[in-house]
Length: 546
Image (cartoon, rainbow, N blue to C red; front, side, top):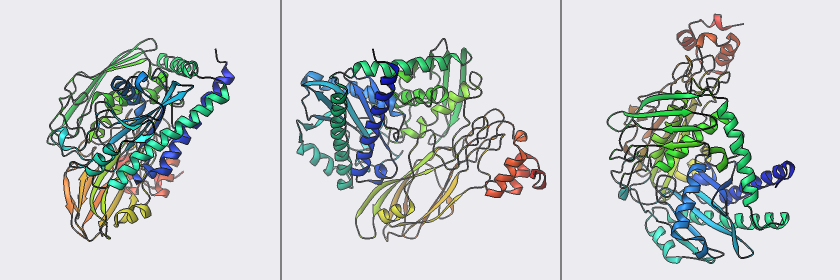
């Protein structure tokens, strides 16, 4: 039995270790996707495969996928067959995170000859061949190299054949293989830190600590669920597909410390790369409930244990091979929206208005000096408002990637970012205002054609307000001033410009209840205009003054 004081110290230390592993991953990576945008996750799991801790600067949704990935890895390579120095890897969408662009790298942690834990590092790679990261594929085989569970390192020796296979299939082999090896380095460091941790605390078995961490978190989650109004809640939303809108539906049972989520009624998978394997849909649902209940509790498997999730096989939230899944985030990021809408009555003070979401554009071409370019540009819409709290301006949600600094992006690609500015009046009006979107204008100064793949959502269905709040402004993508399909493939000639106008977050509460002082501050900051105040709040500029 671990007492409360020791548990707090050891739990904090374990989180610090995962953060150090993240730091190692960031420092050794080659692509800006990891080093600047933090499209990554590091987790530590006990010898039974239960998730104990996750790095603070990680994609939280992978708390739902990592334990399943480890399970698949151990089915292929049972624990008794693993040796010190072995490293397993996969990027299979149905075994990993839902698309081929994330590689999952795992190392068993040995202590006195036995496995005491597992360390897993997950990053989005700059390229895996095929069409490239996009929604353009019509089947999984077009999306690039797909690795089953493989032994990338055998007892400390890197598999040269796998290295050659990966390098041969990608556009930027140095960056891609560099990022894969950064994952290997990270899990190697993770094993060393965990062994030191066990030596310091005189233990060969982390399972008692894991059970205590998960037990505390599960109890906290069940208490938070009991604060919700019990009952059955349903919701249905529509969102952009490719040629027509798609329905996402859910039915949620809130019981005594438990929640059951069923996505029955959701539309079928389609022959374009926006389908979602269940591993990702499940993880997004778990993340949504954690946001409503115990957001401050560090991520581990206990915090989501009371939540069960189902989705019909063959639906767009449980797509089966060979469905293409490259842009699965485009659909998966709507899961919090449908869940928050369903639970608005059960937890009215905790749900959030819709976020403008992250926007990701893939760039493939050549640098001005002739080097190949294959990378991603992340930009964000506005955060959805909460009760008594404005949404953050240009803050991503429900994911949490960072944005590449302008200077770094221009050096990497020789594209020029002409303008980045927040869009006044783009946040939904409300007692709490939705976060602003932004416009980013980029010019192709490479001297070569640059292919881009757009993966935008919130273009036809803007971020919804909550509790009487207004919707945020919709997203739009333009090339040379002309609106284009938000999920299309385009070639920018030298000198061409792409403009990404990001969606604003939804507002929360009746706009008439927004304090005049808050409106005046918004006007002073340029978040709204006088005309916008008159239109959205029904008062004049003078009426907004104290």
